[in-house]
Image 1 (cartoon, rainbow, N blue to C red):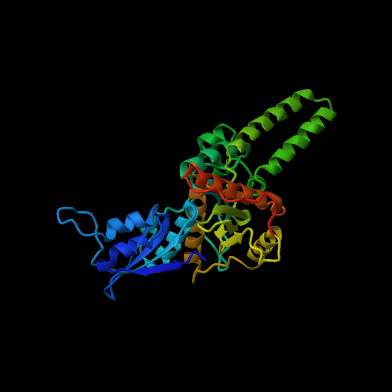
Image 2 (image 1 turned 135 degrees about the vertical axis):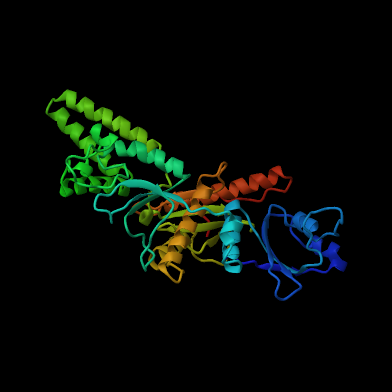
Amino acid sequence: MLELDAGLDFSPEQDAEFYSLLPAAPAVCLIESREENAEPFLIRTADLRRRLQRLLGPADPPSKRLNLREFARTVRYRETGSAFEQALTYYRHAKQIFPKRYRDLVRMRPAAVLKVSLRNAYPRCYATRHIAVDSQGVPTGGAYYGPFRSRRSAEAFAEKMLDFFKVRRCQIKIRRDPTFPGCLYSEMKMCLAPCFAGCTKEEYDVEVNRLVGFLGTNGGSLQQGYEAERERASEEQDFEKAASVHKKLEKLDDVLRGRPELARRIQDLDAVILQRTAEEQTVGLYAVRAGRLAEPFELRFGDTSQPRSAEETVRNYLAGVMNNGPHPTAANARQSAAELSEHLWLVARWFFSNPREGEIFFREKDWPYRRILRGCSRLLARKAEAKEESGVPKGKVKNEEPK
């Protein structure tokens, strides 16, 4: 999927007919050269016909505008129904055609995540844009949590979250020297102070495991612990302690409200993104497994040739993704880590966009199939409304589950 599935040969003598055959719609387009060894020209645009009229029209000698009229031989393109589909299509073809400079073309920057580096004897939690993976493409060397909108937002969340844990925040070399004065956090009793042997290795590991458990459960482990502690204090009629724990819960709730829904342990980032497509009565499904984008799928509504229901079709697609893929396509761990970071960036860039087009549903214990289908209906209804507003007659959109 996401192939450049349409194409036309370009001839300057017949440019009027050429333009008339192009859709005036968003698309990703590859302009191939008349010369065999020349690099093609890859573009993405909101209006393919208008963009190619500018690029392939008669040259204006005084103008410095790029003109490819004498360069172009063939045009291959794909109509895109959403900004996400266009970004992913452009990324895939740029990576395939320009493997050395596709990141610059896409203007890509690795996604920001939080990392607890478990390879360190005394781990700390910090923001990073580098994710290490093993030979199977699984993040290794620590616990990764994200992605976030930016490194600054990741650091802001970590700053508030770490108030509940006494793990170190400084980058001071651990000396285990009792005469060492320590850092500001150790003086404020906000750290177990391993730098001057303020705790044993076992005690510090317990605190780190609490932190990793917090990130792995999106705060649920700590929240449940506080709730149980407050309940015990109330049963023992220790109302002062119950009030103190209640204040901690309120503070924790405030921290968790600031957590973006997308941010979670990378291995647990399983979701499906719904997007409009250029095809009528069709919704694009983009599954995310462990932070990696799987091969997308087009769910066609109203297709009477398909005996299966829409829910069964969605179930089969997502089951196939979770059971069989996506597997790392890179040749080595370094390339696989780069691919994971790139996919996280694509997902985060869409998720934090404003306005955000499309919908996303996360897999918790299971997939919310009914909610996914309702999301598909909403997308089709919005597409019909948009056409009506633009003067195109509104087609019939069924609210019931299609077959």
